[in-house]
Image (cartoon, rainbow, N blue to C red; front, top):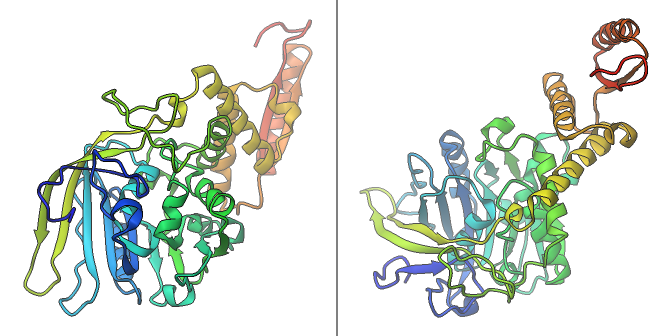
Length: 409
């Protein structure tokens, strides 16, 4: 067993790979799967939230095993404590040395050792109802999966339930799991769901928002602190993915370079070296097995797979789409804005919505001023526009063009 055999020194985060150089936790192509359901959660820090949500996971009826992937939390997360009478078992994988949260790699690692026929995947900030599995039936013969659906959100907070997922272990690896080239926030879930529908030919069913709750928090409390505009990152990742070869379940290759990077003929997946094995025991709780690993190779991220000019072009387009589609900024105006001004405008609009508790279906009204002619005329119209937009809670956009009357910015 991966959890007890000291001769096993490494593993590959790919459930369908039969790589001879690493240990397959669930056997080649899942031949060692056990019946039942595993609950898989991946967390990085967020200790207070985890302390609340993990208690609800332990109470879900029908869960046989809880697997926690602790993605370099500091200090390490404490595993849920279950009474000796509990039929559930808890296993923890602690990943050392990761500076940034990478959902795709973390969940693929967890799924590669979640050796149950069915897996319930949750975010660290999800609270579950006791009867969640009873209300989301998934038999051995089901050609379907359950997933959160942001389109059905009844409020802004429920948009974040999109990551909830219940599916068969074999179906997950049939499409290659999460695309590990997505290493920043956004589009990882929807990309997987699309492949489950198109490649595995599964029916997508909606997770009930009445049975799972997202613990509300500001974007600043995300595991990744470098995400300024979450919605733009979603568009950005999607745009780059459209330019790359598909993430192929049979496209895993062994590479000779030390970074395990992709080569022209295929896709590399993450690899991990086993650092330590332990079993946490106490008098009144079930023992918890803990496996500590450290990454030894990873695929290249999306931004590393395109040149800088192409990446900047995609970011520019993603900003434009979000400003146009969600905030109704006309493309004619956007085309006159560089990246810096688009980011500044989006920041102002997002700040307005947050400070005024505006729901995502609404947006701030815009006031567009095209300043022209001499300096005096421009300053007079600018002062009026600033006063009017402030009085009526509108976002002011100023177009300042050089002309024959004033040739300065």
